[in-house]
Image (cartoon, rainbow, N blue to C red):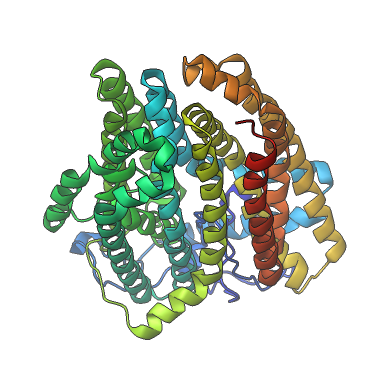
Length: 536
């Protein structure tokens, strides 16, 4: 089954099982590590990666990992199952296009839930806030730029965690795994405090500058979104001694500002939890649902909190910020607990050396630059939408969150390409025709998925706009751009497949140049439209 394959390739170390006799039917191939743009994760490693008699930084003696006296028959059966699954995964390139498409869908299915939770929480906030006030809905645009978009640039922490932990696992060095987790937790905590300071002291100024003098009425609502959590996060930080950094993803501006240390630590914990899956045989594949459960619970809490605080209690945008913060705290606690159950100490942090910092930058640097380019582009869109008035930016906020919710379904296609393409491009059994066939399958799935998402994503704001806002003027602004909106939704999933293939081929130069070109070209369109097409 392909569901047990990794979503990011393990390092290029060929591992052999000392307890199994080699079989001539098992092809040997090197595998390659590639850098994903989003939260990449490792669904499984074979139990042959498990170190023996290692216990460092464990929470308690009962959680120490010791496998020396395991039943050999049971261990051999488990390893045979893992190898069987790997053989099936390697045979993907030899299947027909139709079978490839079915296997790819099975492979990407479990991954989709992890990507959906973040956009889902933002979409819930948008829908609930829009029911109460168009001004607060519009204020979400600048507020999310200052808060969410800035935070997305720090996803390099998740990427670095996935890559470094996977490498240490392949070396069978649990001590190194614990050390990598510890230094990345420190980096996450440091970056989180940095974000806290910046948003605390400069958030209001940034929000005012971003909104412009014509939209000064948006600043109080946006500032509330950013500021509410400030004292709550301080409380969380002071509580670190007891239940250290339990937080995870996004919040609303300042309320979110205080949650930044926990948010970034949560990202590290999530990636580490997923990548260390193979080191906990007693939990097995069942434990791979831990981070997904945490995010599902977080989304549920966020939705219930939004409805209760915003609709029934009338807290508006501040209520949405509080609901998001609480949901992130709960999710972070669950993910840290999942990591602790594997025998690692998520409470131990280590200050990295200069060389270790350089290694993190070497892994995540190119992706950080690419993510920054994307963030700048979307920030430019929000900036010019804000300059066109309250109703325009409110409509833009609704469509942007709906767009994010739809296009995230294409992300697993990128991960699929990164997992299977390296074998066909660089492997021992190198075959460019098979790589082209696999790419054709991915693009076909992307095109089909894009058409479905385009229809659904366009139909919701066209026929059910009251889900997000009762304001007629906002709805009219939404309807003006449905055609280009449909085209964007239809094309994006296929581009994810192409992007993943370029990453698998390690063509980072082309990706960087193309992203820079898209940013430069895209930055010219909004001002030209405002100057020549928008009536005054």
